[in-house]
Image (cartoon, rainbow, N blue to C red; front, side):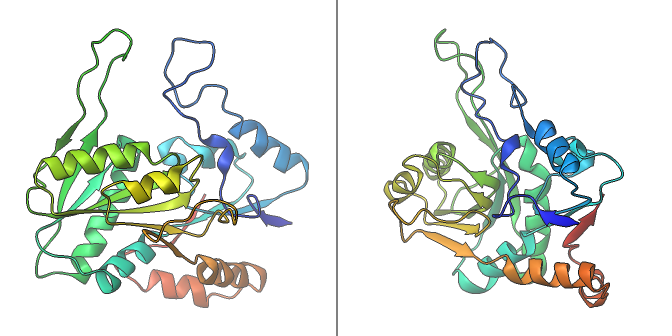
Amino acid sequence: MYVFVRRDRYYAYKHHRRANPAATSLNSKFIQSPAADIAKMLEVMGVDRVIAVDMQMRVEGHEACFFSSDIPVETIETIMAGVEYFATQVYLRRPLVVMAPNPECLRRARVFQTGLNKWLPDSPAQFAMFFHGTGKKESGERSPAEIVGDVKGADVIVVDDLIDTSETLSKLTNLALSKGARKVYCFASHPLLNGDAERLIEDSNVSQVVVMDTIPADPNAFHTDKLKRLSVAPMLAELIQAEHFKAHSYIDKVNSREDFKYVHHY
């Protein structure tokens, strides 16, 4: 038996807000993480194969390694979907800058940059990195946030793995614009959008936020026209077909592309 991790294809149990550690002075995103426990529960239930979307790889030390080595874990990367959307559906003006909002998304942003440069070779996108301020607010010794890289006059695309409260995106956008960026866009795999996240996106200076539909939208929540959802269903359907019927058309199609590899096997 193989299943998706949750009905919405998102392995939610690994995510924690680092700003509010519980009952400890440590500031770690792995505090009280139930991700490994959930993986073990799924195995006990009889799951012997896992298919997920943009699950961080074992080599990155994240949720794929929570499953035992005899459980095949496959994750579909959605970077190409984001690249294709921005290259064909968004009017981007040069210069272009792809930005990683944190060290965890450095690889994703680099892959996005490489893909965008293949689609738009006439004006290669440059790279930038956003660094949060360090230190504690209470002590007044917190260093300011900064952007490493030149964004002046550029259209900036922030490449993230998920959007939770949108506070970091709003802060990053304002900082980039203050440094001369023309517009700021964002691509992220998973739209958690907790609290008033969509309203904050609406009120922020970000031009557009593009996400995959790995998490269903709350029909009762506020929705902004700045948010665009792309469907992950075609990629999942082809992978399921390849796995269930042992068809190789999907894998062959993936491997025939020189720019990306959609599916990772662990």
